[in-house]
Length: 174
Image 1: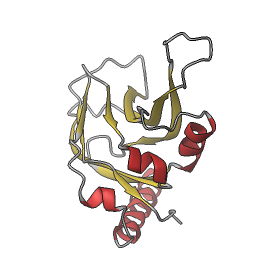
Image 2: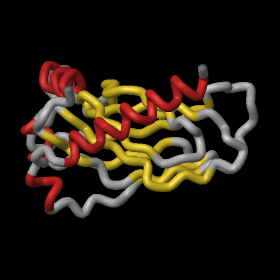
Image 3: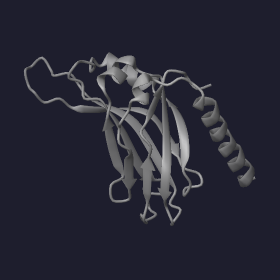
């Protein structure tokens, strides 16, 4: 039963990746020189800045690819994906601007030692940023990736995930 469910899940992920591969991409992606993000058991979170053009266009789809996995202990991992942004400065004149997180989605590797690709809907996160008034020429919007053990009592072993640069797409997944 577990193998059947696993096969269906893997097949669905592959099918979504193939279907999404032919869809048009944001021109920013074509000229993107954004570095990859690497998460490890010692550094389980990392972020990348988003350029103002991407934030203004608010692409509805994030294609996220884990291109390398080192997980010899097969630690079950969950990955949370967020947009983070600074709230506008308060009218009281204080310069302190808190950073807020808006969830795009949660994903998990299965099997936990194999690379994978994911399509996530980013519409809600971009809407939250817009409604908070956090989009301006001085916006500091970042894509944040956080890795956690599914079984938190299980100790960390050596884990390394290398993500390809994110791809922002204009076409919604089906």
